[in-house]
Length: 259
Picture 1 (cartoon, rainbow, N blue to C red):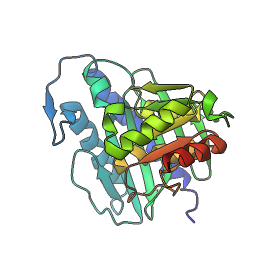
Picture 2 (cartoon, rainbow, N blue to C red):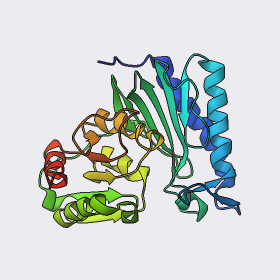
Picture 3 (spheres, helix red, strand yellow):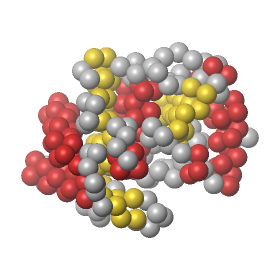
Picture 4 (cartoon, one colour):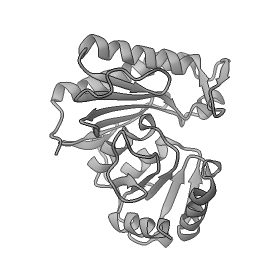
C-alpha cells in the first residue's frame, strides 16, 4: 500500500498549479489558433505551453521522477514517482471562453495516484487531496455528501457523445436511474463531487492525464472512484471511470453498468 507523499511533494504540486495558472490566464478569452489532434480532439498553444512549463519544473526539482502528459511523449514513465499532467482539461470550454476548464496535476507512485490537484485558474477554484492529506477546496475542508438513492442523485459527465456502442447503452441505463444528468463540466464536475454538490461522475475513453488527479481528491474527500468493474484506478486503467460521493450510490451504479 502506498504511504502519504512527503509534505514537500504536496507543496510542489500546488507550486506547479500556481505557475500553470499564471501562464494560462493571459490566453483565456483571447483569439487563439486551434489545431485538431487525431480523433478530432482540439489543442492550442496554451495547452503546449503549460505542459512544457510543468515538465521543466519537474525536471529541475525532481530529475529522477517521470512525467506523463497529454501533449508530449512520456518520460521515465516506469519510475517510482511519476507526475501526470493535463495542462487544460476541457479545451473546448477554454476555446470558447467558458471558465470550466481545469489544469490537472497528479503524483503517481508505483502506478497508483497518491496526490491530486484540480485547478481552475480563472475563477480561482482549487481542489487538492491525497493519501494522508484531507481534501480541500480553496483551502477549506472538502467533503462528499450522503446520497444512497440513485433516484435522488446528480450525475455529471463531459459529453454523452463520447459513449459509443455498449458504453452508450450503459450510460443510458445510468442516466435513466438518476435524478439529473449534467454535461460539459469535465474534471470540474468531479471537483464538485468532492465538495458535496454532485453525487456521481461517469466517463469513458479517458487517459491517465484525465483521471489520475481526480482519484486522490475524491477519495480524500470521503468518496470512491474506480473503473467500471469497481477496481481502483491506476495509470494502466482502461479509461472507464465511475466516481461516487456515497459508496451506496457508487455500488448501485456499478450494478447497473453490469446490466
